[in-house]
Amino acid sequence: MTTGVWNDINATMMSTIVWKYINDTKTSTSVWNYINDTTMSTEGDISVEEYLEYKVAVLINKYYLYILLILGLFGSISTLVTLTTMRPFLASAIFMCVLAVVDGTALIWKMLYLQITLSGIQIGDFMCGFFYTFGSWTQQYSNWILVAMTTERFIAIWFPLKVSKLCSKTRTIVESIVIAILIFGLNLHFVWTFQEISDPVLKHSCAAKREYTSFINRIWYWIDGTSYSLSPIVIIAFLNGMIIHGIRKARKKHRDLTNIRIDGMKERSRQERQITIMLITLCVVFCILTLPNCIFFVLKDTWNWNQSNYQIALYSLLYQIVFVLSDFHQSVNFYLYCLTGKKFRNQFKAVVMCRRGQSNRKWQSKYTDHTISTIRNRSFSAWKGSESVCEMKSTGNNTDATNFTISSSL
Image 1 (tube, rainbow, N blue to C red):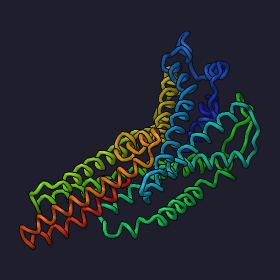
Image 2: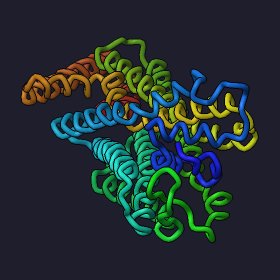
Image 3: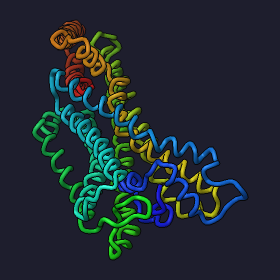
Image 4: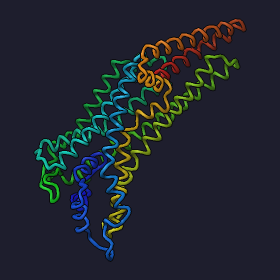
């Protein structure tokens, strides 16, 4: 990193810090020597570069983005191919496709900006602002798509009779566009608040204009952190909790109405467990990978990290780790889908084995068999009494709609 980070770390902010970090990253030995020579204090003959923490930070800095780019692009492309070959193609799949495109674009954009910066290419004030605007937009937009996906599942669980109206494909596309416009507008200020400047190590760098420094450090700092991580985490955690509660409530109510363990009920129970595991996994992974970024930059002002070489080395390591976690969030979604979504995993295997038609026929056959089994067992229940049948119809329709919606999205 250059002295731009060390001397003016407050000029950075939550998701935007990724772009400042890329801009302020240099992996050559001369840069690390430059940093070492500008530290505020020394500890005998031990320089910053001699600490293990600093060596690990340099190693991470050199390679992590390239590794995540490979993993992320493979995951994004695989997600798009898998989802577009799944039948039926539901509204939830649109959100997942948008998320895959945004995550892949974000990784490519970071790598592009990194190469431009390290090459010393002059891009001008407007492009500086645009790189920050688009980069911060991809970070925030990705998280809010997750919020939209969770909201759709919440509606499917609690309002199954309205899901076809509230979660149609048209509405999903409109919602994605509206969210994109709002988030982009929120970050558009970088176009006029940032400029290209000369850098003591890099030939050219981007930084806030002097008249907007106070706004960036004191106001935008918290707006960006709230939009990037805090608000999505709170909303996703709440909605996931309500979804899990709704699934358990529906299962308990259905068991109270009948003690018959029919095939349809077993299938629904399996689907409920699967969707619960997926939701918990997505929520926990999202929090683990994004929350440390916010915590780090909220608490950093209380840490006098530049008072000794060891503190600088430790700060460098933590600085790298929080960004690896944040960037890893945009590379891991495909692997979570495969890990927790059986239908998605099977479809991906079918695509790899060039068995698209067979996979779709298998799904259709399975759904038909499940429907026939449900009808047969309900006919058996009718023989036991009309009151029991009415109760099963009332509850069954509600539960079937819920489980069909959520299971088809996996």
